[in-house]
Length: 478
Image (cartoon, rainbow, N blue to C red):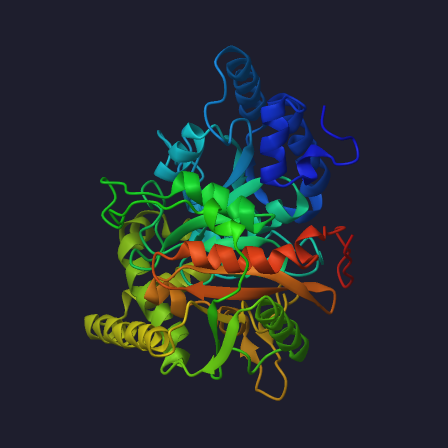
């Protein structure tokens, strides 16, 4: 049995895998611990659309039997992982947190779920997303750090579940911010891999040309482990890149010495929360103290990233949803239905113009990396902390109030357009709520992103903090 001082649900994926492999913890014990934690926290956090308790316990029993008879199926043997409810899981509705899809039961697993199962993982449930992944709030899920605040979105359910320990790790998607933002708000690690690195097949799309699939975990190493077993070519997915998968875990053996890290002068820190900026700059200084070379850089046209991403997402989402709106439009939420109807009015010329500006942004970021010989960019994940649920705007310093989506997503959307790997890791607390450091790498260089994030995590305490489910208006860390 695992150490009684550490409840199995509270352990990292890395620790859980070691306990399971050694026999000190059984898959059934682990599943029971996670289900107990779900029962304890769900009335307040609301991270799940569907908890698969019976099937999880049955799969855990099979996992224990397999381990005794023939050994582990893979490195994730017996580990409960939560899946954002835009992915198909056989026998369970893929609702996308929309009433319009409550009866649409999947007949087979999405490719990312198949790969997790092949590595031995178990599915503990489907997590809440902002309806059709089109937003940053993920209602009714709340931040475990302040139950009056949003968890970020659209992978808010996955972020909250990892943070509160109602799963061991989770899968999310990122189209404009949706892995990194809830990771920052919920105080966990989350990685958006390079576009095409992980298959999108079996996922309900938001924006085909911007959708990324990636891991969310308690630590950088947990994310690297999940990516190791989900990345790789999928010939049946047109967006998948036919590229070999490196050893992501090997990159974690090195510190930040020798890395060149660019800190943008424009667009990312201001307007913003002063405490957020202070914490992020301190985090960058920590990497510099390890031997990284830090230099200020300009990133031309980066301020166009969010509006361009929004136009592209509107048009591509409207295209996908056209038949569904005609058939089931009355069951869509008002916010998303309005966005989709607006997208259907976009002219082809608007979409083409947006794609042309996207190419400009992509080239601009590429030139910034090349001209400065950068390994990484470092920025705040978001320039503000989580706002109260239902609050429409955020005030940042002397700037005019900004819509919540603009304030929270502006640092993130540009890198969905460029397709580069980007990661959020916790770097402190502002007003009692987590703050994230974003590290952005060169295309297909997730290894360096993971290396730097792990190097920072190794010398800081933030990833070990656990939320205490503070009441609305309060916040607390363990």
